[in-house]
Image 1 (cartoon, rainbow, N blue to C red):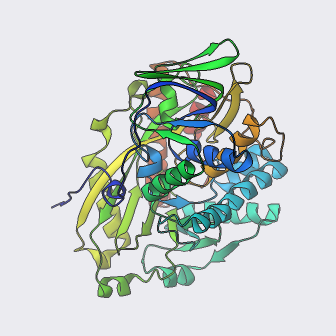
Image 2 (image 1 turned 90 degrees about the vertical axis):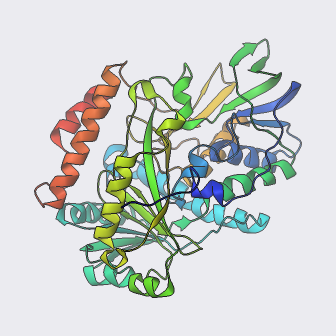
Length: 461
């Protein structure tokens, strides 16, 4: 029988937070940032570092760390597009290399910033181990390694079956690769610690404040809130999955719910049966990946397996748990680690990530150059959102840089079809991906994407 309890998120339960006050009255600022997740906070941080006198307001509807920034698996990794091989194929060698290296730099810089400011977020730079559990997944690993070698990227190492199983003791592994550029962390502690740093640098953070409207008002942008108003020279929109609720992004992103289960702390004897001394993050090569890592208090976080898009892109608290996916998660955990068959699960939660048609984030500018946006990380936004903060800083300051030339900045952004076609297409895509995962497990599918899925994605794009 499944046993679990705990808050909607283990991360929220284990990070103390005293909310900043809600916005009231009139505020005149240089930059208003809508969204208090990683993108908004890193943008505020970069702007205050670049221009210490700049007046900045960060406006968060709920609390810092409420959205994906406080609920994710805690992987700061380089993944863009569906894989490195896809990124190279879809964007070309030069663009793929520049994008990957920009995010790899962000992983390193995040660690440096966390250390400099003493942010207690359980940062462990142990790398990423991508594992294959069947021949189809192994072919995808081989394609990524080929792409890394062709692009001249550093930090990738092929692992044999024995080397993979020596790192983490699972009989399911048939091979893998090691990527150096990955760290694991406590995501809510990072978000809340970063908010404190931003406040100390002079930005003002408002929590519990919704935004009713963003409109041009002469030479200012007027941000209307329930109990006050902000007049800004420029605005940054950083609401990720919630951007679907705005008129600008209704057809460009859709929220996909992904889910996590967390075990009780393992005993020393249980950890000895698993290994995993490096604290590396782990992902497999399913379409709906399993992603997992250990925590500093000795638990295993186990996420993925499936993802749900609700009709109309709805986001609601009732979707934060999913018993069917929880059952599937615990089942695949026990298949991966049969030696941990008696371990209980104590926490289960989920939340929405922002999915784009081309599986890349999007950064750009609206309202005649006075509103900038960054969103759509497709479930891997911890490190790319740091890159995004630097991009948005440059855009606010009117600078052209290597970052503003990346392939997902000011690029063509494919749109989703209207409902009900959007949901129908998403559900066809989901079922096709799950079908291919099942065929992989039986070694009955190639590493290439399902032909039906390719047709659907072409229609969507």
